[in-house]
Length: 292
Image (cartoon, rainbow, N blue to C red):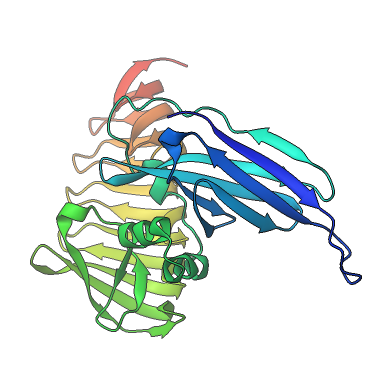
């Protein structure tokens, strides 16, 4: 993919009531990039090339393109736009696709639900794709953040709470089904714009469950996870790429206290085996690699 070029031109308003200038932005692109979708501060602005009028200040510009049937977020940059100052900004060249693009950095946008729905109403293909990827709706059209792989064919079975602004709101219990399993999972707690927030509980049909803190629909903060295989983890929760600290107690009696990442012993910690053997030092992918 070749370089997109952003040319920012600011023109003073002639109105006597205007105390600041609007920023007039023209986003241009080479022939290969024509048709890329453009979003400014979460609002869909059209396809490149496109002219944008906005207020001065720092703005989040996102440009995405479709490759092999799926969207790839190509650029996500903060663009400063001044009042009465002509600007020219060249965005960095995107790396060539070495393989079909993945969804990872696209669904992670987590656009606020009202902004997302505004984009859907405006016909934004990006908003429609993000909504379909992250949210499920019940039979009444109430949406919930429930990120599930497409091939699992998940659907909302029931919601006991209220629906506000098109999304689940307030205390309640969400039950969803997957591939014929009618009660695949249950999510209980307080919902804000379709996302569970604060203290909550998640239970799966195989006995796995989590009780603890949620932020934006994700397990974040302190909590306790019981795994289907009988293992138990108590400690911090973040994304899988972030190192956290906690206590992992295996079904066989082994106990590990220390740093974990991607659900495995990674980092500094102490492992006390069921027979009482104590091993302290650095671990990598559940294996002891040596003392600190």
